[in-house]
Amino acid sequence: MVATQSLDIDDFLQAAQEVYTSTIKEDRGLRDVVVETLFKHPAWLDENKVQDVIEELRGLAFDLLMYTHRQNRSGLRF
Image: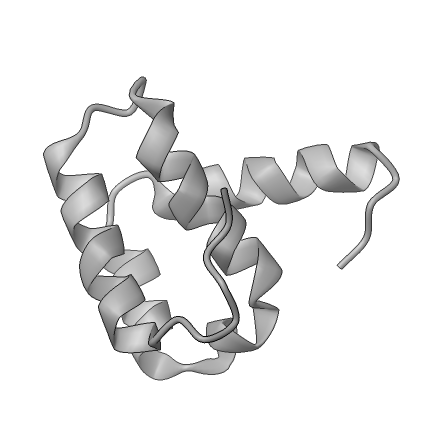
């Protein structure tokens, strides 16, 4: 499940912080939603507040890197 285009970036970042601070890394359900949403909104990565959250949240940068790698290996490009 990927969030819709109308998602507010601030609400998303708050939810991402909650997900990554309240779940263990093996609990992929909500973490995968966060990663998929960032993947589907690459322009968000230009936002300083998004960069700050990615840097702050342990594991999010790695999860995003690995998701991107898997998508590229599958032939999907962003």
